[in-house]
Length: 113
Length: 111
Image (cartoon, rainbow over all chains, first blue to last red; front, side, top):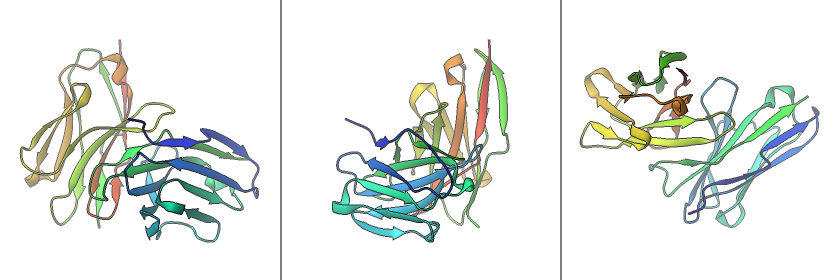
């Protein structure tokens, strides 16, 4: 069974530029999560989708971050414009339902210069 | 407030020695508990989970964890550490809506 797929794995951009991350969850998993992991810290939830509906986006900085999950499968997380403080690893995870264990992708390491 | 505390930021053990990583949680009830491992440049891999029942749970790679309700703890153990176990370990709980992680413990293994 294929795991959670994320791309790109690494991205370096200049501040004020836009950036997008893509995630394909495990087949059959209806719940999808985006996390941000700062250096030396645990992941923090940005947004949670159940199917195509964003049901928890309270931690998403909505002035510059946006996300979508069209058709309830793949998801894209976008930052526009990026700031220096956005440098982090962005992790995507999926689960069958929200209460069960989550499976994580390899993450996208973003560096904003 | 809901939180997970991993008191040890770094731990160094010799290869072949036993290991215990500490985890304490703060929550009004018994949450679902997890241990994840993250190797450099990799995502998080689930080691084991506790939902209910037997408080000693077995995981992959020879790891086990014990849930102690009275201490609000879920410590991770391994009887004999291998050099490949060097990584960052995260304790987490799911209280229904979201997964809350501890700050992680970085394990280093001496030859």
